Structures are given as structure tokens and as C-alpha cells.
Image (tube, rainbow, N blue to C red; front, side, top):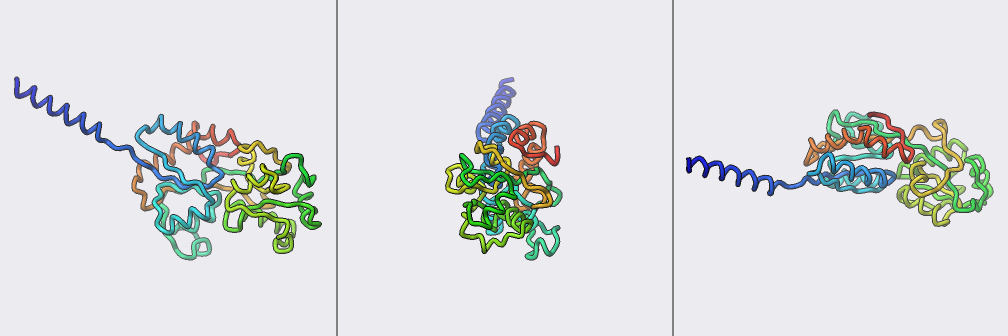
Length: 267
């Protein structure tokens, strides 16, 4: 009997030590800057579902994040603000989309998660009297507006270039009326702080910054603003990464995304 009690005690001690020594998992998520507010809120929700998982976010332009992944940065989940950057890492994408034949995406995990809108917002008081993209076009042609836009290597800048093409605007000819940001948050800040008269940003960033868009780009103007997400092929925690991606498709996460203007593409 005494021997049995000793064995049971040893088992209990071992089990307690194992529990105490169990380490939380750091899940590294690279996400477009426009997801800063929503994913930060979702982190608190996810802690209730997976208390042993610490979400470590890096927010920046999708182009910068893609480059960091390609250069060997640790990343478990990547969420881009456009398919372009995800395609450049996806071996299943066309040769045109992925000319380097990079292979960083875990097979079967890629999903189109969200849709956003491209919005035109003005600084407080609307100093240049811009009330539509048509107004903006005329003001750019006459040099009567300072417009904040994203760099050409970030999705919001690439959508802006499509809008310029739609209106037959030559970016080089209007360059003196443009101020650039390295991600959408910098462009938004330029509008909020009245560094620019207006800016082309995402509708969700306008909402988060308390800006009211004066116009929204149509699909014909710049295409759909799709946010793909995927688990990285060399993820250190593939099962936890897949579980987090599944949570992002849940009703609970959808409430957060939709509260700022995202449209869920999958639930």
C-alpha cells in the first residue's frame, strides 16, 4: 500500500511539473497595416479560445512583409491586403504572378478572407473642396490639391495607380501634388494631420481614424480589394497557425471585422 501511494505521489508530482513547465506558444502573424485595430481586438478574443497561444503581430505594408518572409523572417501566418503579394509567395500561382517560383505557402491553407473598399477622404474642413473622385481628378489636373497616396510597392498605392489609369491621369505629371506613405497608416495620418488636403485609403482605415469618406472607388476603377491569408510552409507551429486561421473565419471574428467595414468572404 505504501509503495502504491509513493507511485501515485510521484505521478502527481510529475504531472504537476509537466503542467507548470509547459510553455506558451508564440504564433507570429505578419499582417497588412490596415488590419492593426481589428487583429489587435481579435487577439484578446482568441486568448479565451487558446490561452496558451501568444499572438505576435508585425503590421506593415504587404510588400514589406512579403520581402521579410522571402529574406527568412520567422512567420507562421501571413495576411496580405492584396493577392499580388501572396501570389508572389505561392508556387501554385501563375508564372506571371510568381516569376521566381517561390514556394512559401502551406498547401491547402490559402483563403480569401476579407474584402475592403478604397475610399477618398479629405482633411478637416475639406480645404480643397473635394467631394468625389471626379472632383479630385480635376483638382489634380489644375494643381489645386495635395493628395496623400501609398507608394507603388504597397497595395493601397497599387489600387490608387489603377484609379489614376481609370481617369487617364499621368502620375509623373501630377507628382508635385502627391505625397507618399510607405503603408496605409502613413497615408491616413497625412490626412488626419492635414499634411495633405485629401488621401486615398481603405474604408476601414477611414472608419478607425474617424474620417468620413467623400467617395468610394468602384470595382471598375480599381478592382476588388481582396485580403488573402495563409499559413507559411515553414511555420514552427503549423497546427496552431491553422487553428488561428480558422478562428479568423469564425462568426466571433467576423463581428470585429465587419464592425469597421470589412466584408467577410468566408465564414
